[in-house]
Amino acid sequence: MCGIVGYIGDKNAAPILLEGLSKLEYRGYDSAGIAVAENGKVQLHKAVGKLENLIKKTDGGKKMTETIGIGHTRWATHGKPTENNAHPHAANRFTLVHNGIIENEAALRKHYLEGVKFNSDTDTEVIVHLLEKFVKEDKDVKVAIAHIIGELEGSFALAIIDKEDMNTIYAVKNKSPLLVGKGDGFNMIGSDAMAMIANTDTFYEIHDKEFAVITRDSIEIFTSYAKKVERDSFHAEIDVSDTEKGTYPHFMLKEIEEQPLVIRRIMQQYSDEDGNLVVDKDIIKDIKASDRIYIIACGTSYHAGLVGQTYIEQLAKIPTMSYIASEFVHNMPLLSKKPFFIFISQSGETADSRAVLVKVKEMGHKCLTITNVKGSTLSREADHTMILHAGPEIAVASTKAYTAQMAVLAVLANALSDNPMNLKYELAKTATVMESLCNNRELFHELSKEFFATTRNCFYIGRSTDYYICLEAALKIKEISYIQAEGFAAGELKHGTIALIEKDTPVVAFITREAVNLNTRSNIKEVRSRGAKVLTISLKRISAHSDQIVIGDVDEMFAPLVSALPMQYLAYYAALIRGCDIDKPRNLAKSVTVE
Ligand code: M6R
Image 1: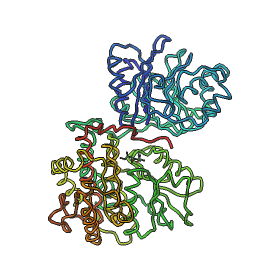
Image 2: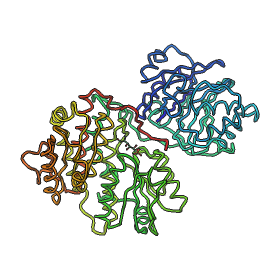
Image 3: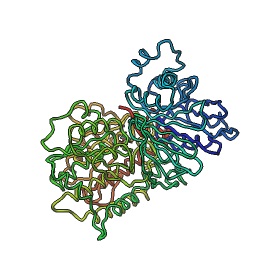
Image 4: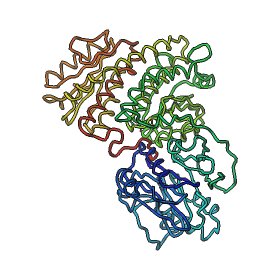
């Protein structure tokens, strides 16, 4: 969702802001804008649609000279994606950009801003008028910002510039991500490190309800009581080339094909000196002291959680259940006596998952976050963190983070087991089979043409962990190709959904578990007799002659990691054939920072 960049230094700010915003495009947005300032004058530039439109409109900022500025990509929440609603928003003295939602905006308007003329439909504009008012009353910008933090309810990351002080950017954070980047002769702010990594790899966190005062040469962080805090900087381990597509046409294809490498990296990162896969002793101790594990996640991460739950139950013998965060938070089941929570989140910023984390922490329960982003909100607020080591995932559709989540959950489950398996051997085999699938991508392209070029809908069926893959397969094809898709437990079809099967309805069946092979094959016959066009994906040792995709053998337990690849490729090619915007699908955001 919305992205923020700010720069203050000696260089022309506009191209740096536009470049930073391009690195935040993956988060999802529908309009963009920058504000650059010099000699007491603030220039606003905004455009609806792709960032490309703003870049064209400003000629890449090349002819501008201002050395301080803030930029924003907006994912509309309050008001349509129009230029008026696009950020930055300005009042008389201050100009700001905002990521998040102000929940009490109506009350604030009524209480403080009666008679003020608003130019947009956004909640954000309330903040800039409020700041204007508080500065007049409080006579000091820092005090006014602290005042604002006390008044605003909801999530807000803000970057603010002041016409009367062109040497300062103010950054404010609560529940929405924001980092400060430290440079040599310049400083920056950004929604994540990727927005700044081309300029610096040294960062400061701002915690919730804190704000930072940033000049060319200094960074000061304050609490909401305007009390200065000391904070150590950290280095982000991001390779700039990881944020580029290289020779690939899309990030999604690049990320699909990075999966063997990611599995090997996980093996390396979780190995001890003797080469054994290990997990931090404190994590094991806390989990072993619990009587039940609750996995909390959203979307793809939830689907990985379902597979992880079977790993933990089978290997560690601890009862485990996965829940969708946005449901769990308002409809919490009766908890066991000693629950332990595992949050799975690629971004580590998902607001729905965080809402549960905040609640269970208040209840005094221990938790672990499994995330791709070190230092992310969910990581900082949990008792423990396990990193996915998948490298930056830029395409909105999650691929490599999904398989990394399952692999890390396998490492955890095995480390909890009293009778561990040779996981290193199994994961190495899994990576090799993944590689052979990547070498066969043309097959998936051809099958996508045959099955998904024009269809309005499609179904994925499977049993046991194949069912979990079906849920993810349906999500994947829906989000990037807009084909209406459903993932079903194969045995459930005849209880209602089979009524939807017509002549040539595409049905993709996953068969990787020997115990249910024949059952799923019976379900295939049932849909075929009703006209369905069936594509079968199976593991070699239980494959049939007619199966179109046969995956090299791995332990059945790890079949979800390998069958993920064909379904990701099928979705990718379906979207390609149908001319969709693969890396930035409509209406979606990579990092969902509002509930
Ligand atoms: O960053 P998270 O893993 O918490 O994100 C959760 C979902 O928003 C995410 O998995 C989403 O479903 C993906 N776009 C799916 O490809």
